[in-house]
Image (cartoon, rainbow, N blue to C red; front, side):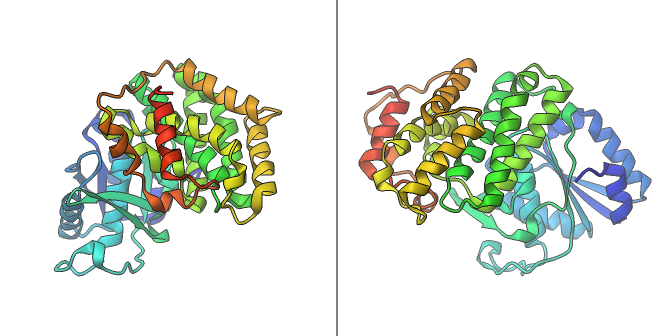
Length: 363
Ligand SMILES: [Fe+2]
């Protein structure tokens, strides 16, 4: 961290660079600078843009072929979550047996470095060992510590051209990462320090960020990055487990859906301490919620929950509306049980349905 693109390339001295990015990256000033820096070390560059949001396994396979055909020895991932996911999978898969499905093979570490340049302040993917791709329509989580990017460049100007909705919801994604990480059953002193730092940075920089100031954009990129460090240690919890179907059913962005889930989950968990499943017990749960409130700059839990609700209200985001009753069944059966296990309070199927009803303003 802290090194410039030029310094990183000089240090690594690659011969052949694979740049994984979206087409919009071409319009950025940083793109030209990147090309100049790669040329400056005498390396060749191959771009890989052939992937979609929620990237498919087939795209990664194609990316691996491009990587091998060009004998790449350095990967740059510039983008939001998808470019990072694809780049991480290329790094993890390129040395595997091409005749077998990569997802079924054991990952063996390799030394190809990844430089990550996030173009949104949200996913924190540049700080995590996780990648998500889709195989035959099913979500696959790939996880290995060797795909945590070796270098990260946080460039505030990349956020200037983002649409307002995108800016709001990526910020909310980062905020939910920090909050969920803080209350996760896997939270440690270290992960909580990251989470607190992220929450405080988000609260401090949100106005400047939404007004597109350089300081605000820089602060939010740092916040999302630190929130990424937090979830890298703890993973996310029920907020993220519950949000995925809301995105597909109602066309909400990931961060927007996660924020709506956290908004109802937080008060539910505070009032259902008897269902605590965190091995540290209910007394810990209370202290933890108090600590989270203080991270939000509040004296009491209720105050922190209200502050969070007001923050969401300020953003004037549209609310999802139920079209048919059967959507509730689809929603409550969609929740990923693995992520639910990270949640400190047990959620029964009825509780989950109740929370979705609240999100959809049916109660
Ligand atoms: Fe997220």
